[in-house]
Length: 300
Image 1: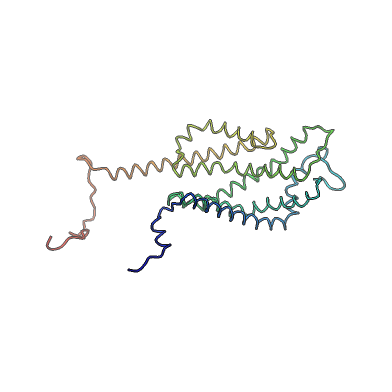
Image 2: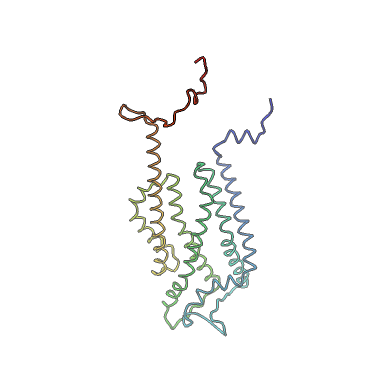
């Protein structure tokens, strides 16, 4: 008898893709390494594009009125550094930020690829949609954070009054901007997680509808705690779009669950035994005798 290759036997004996804890840890390590490689490659591009990226990140600070921030010479605004290595670490930080943004679809795919083996076959078809939507939502959150940064910085720097000027270091400013961008981008992934949980059957629409008021309250509470600027404008700028996205996710869950329930009712109706009052299905086009019987013969 011909021997079956070991890889084929392993695949046949494990059709559901089950893995041991050690295999899960190895897969996690592999995915993390791939994600880090992609971010590192993107950071090389960010290193080459350092000057335009830094100008882009400085723009919200430069939008603050000059009397509230430090400026010298012919420049409209200045960020300083005090350590010998601060210039190098600043360029490295900006490069990593740019690399993470440039390669977001690639490392987001690694996250989804790690989750996919634990899903059913009909749930894995959402891979490309997950990557596309998560990338768009993350980019939308970062874009909104960038747009409200100028207003948030203006509110914070005005609090000291006209007799004081902000003397910000480039490291502290970039840390603040990075935190704002990441928090807004991650917060906008909430509706996607809700939709994926609903598609997996973990979070039905009736649970979401009952918890809508609590969810809205928790969203505003999260925005108040998570925003680094702690001003009401930035908090509302994060909370209101999150509430709208959450309501859209709830609406999607309601429509999805109704369609799912309708399909289940039709499937159950087809499997129920017929009673005396239920008419039987009749083929309107008669077929020749024995056309659908494989075992029919002249001797039957």
